[in-house]
Amino acid sequence: EPEVTQTPSHQVTQMGQEVILRCVPISNHLYFYWYRQILGQKVEFLVSFYNNEISEKSEIFDDQFSVERPDGSNFILKIRSTKLEDSAMYFCASSGDIYEQYFGPGTRLTVT
Amino acid sequence: KNEVEQSPQNLTAQEGEFITINCSYSVGISALHWLQQHPGGGIVSLFMLSSGKKKHGRLIATINIQEKHSSLHITASHPRDSAVYICAALDSGTYKYIFGTGTRLKVLA
Image (cartoon, rainbow over all chains, first blue to last red; front, side):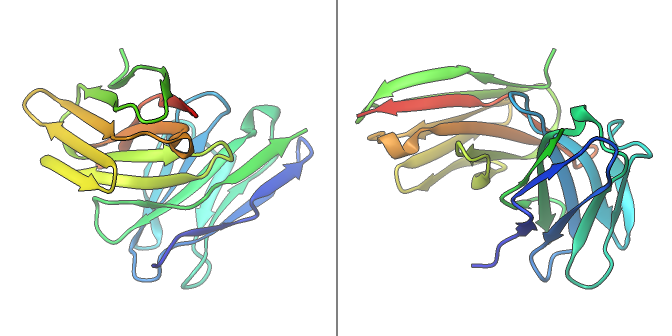
């Protein structure tokens, strides 16, 4: 069964560094999403992406964050100048329509 | 007030018990998603519902659109069911998921 994959599974970085979180969505999907879950809190929407551009973003998704789809398979979240409070699980999801989303296993980001 | 509320927040059950987790939402939705999150953090999709009832193995999910309420039931619970169960409502205006805070289930052998 096709699935969404994410790499790395765990990333440790120093404050101020840039991190790149990678996602490979399901191949025929058109809608892509990033979510964040700070430890002990609920999952929060970050951004949705369709037709090579951002379709929605939350107030969390400020200039520190960017997304891109550099080729036909990867969907990337970049976090510039990381802060301690960026430590969280980051989930990618994809969907073939606007309804059911398929989630990846997540990347645990630890900023020290 | 949270737009998606789950209850209970924590639940401990004995193996074999019938378990119910509730989700209430205040927004108009196109669909509701039940997710399972294991201790390692990964999320697995269990059900997506827009009406009625769905069953998969020992899991049953129901939704009442008029009452804005959904339930997830686990029959004959097992320690491997121990996880956090998350309800996510797909807002029909924005098509963004709004997540509940999750129900932490522990099933004891």
